[in-house]
Length: 373
Image (cartoon, rainbow, N blue to C red):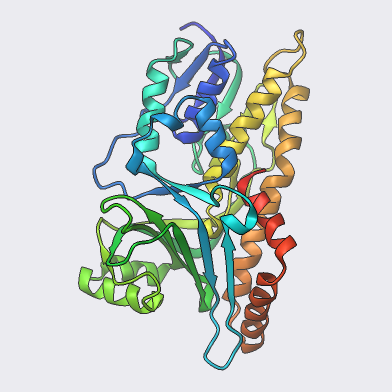
């Protein structure tokens, strides 16, 4: 095509969702970038909040997902790193107590990506185009290594944690009952079990284990027997006896926010705009929140205002400033708090978890923010 209204660079979940949302407004969308190859060993899972699910439902994607590709989270149990003679360090959330249907929904990443790709193929306003196709607005959704962001000269200096996240699939000899579990331990290590339906209905988990680079490399190199032994020791049988049911994959963790997320004729979304620690499972939710916000801003623009107008795009930047900074600071503070090695810090953080567990109004406020409501 000679030109499009909006050029979306990046075909991940954020870029695909933005393209579908803008196409629904009747805009001509150019989608650039190579489609992500479908991998049989993809072990990624996404924890989506209510706002993300609502966006995907609006795009006619959510209800088309296979039933076993999604699993609601009804309860969440967070455990600290208390020792036997210290406070318990335990925090729990219940969807019933918070007055919501579910705390989150765990979705198979590959299944979601495939359904988004199918929706794009049937959208008459979305076209595959070259990366240099002229457009009134260019939306950069290329991820943390965005070449287009770098070409614009936008400041983006990730602060490495010196940690990696390790992901895989597990099966257990006990039903998960829709309970997500998370353990904080010394050195800022975070282990999360996300209830799932694949490969074994009601007895599967997605694992995200964040730990120091050396530790992650060791876990990746372990035999299955040794890995399972270490995993079951770390979870103390709370989720039953866990066994590997997929390959292991790792990626580096960092905290970052772009110096500018908009400019004349361009906007950054998703990991191209911000990186947060995965301990709260909010990375993709922030990105989908970006897509929903930019789509709203464009839908509400004055009829005479161009799509790439800098003042228009600043409305999007202002709307996303507080949520992204708040989530980045919160996850960073929690990671640093549990990385502190002193016994005093350990005592304070575990007492803090216990105290927070008794503050129902605060827990409700946190739940509403996590749900994107």
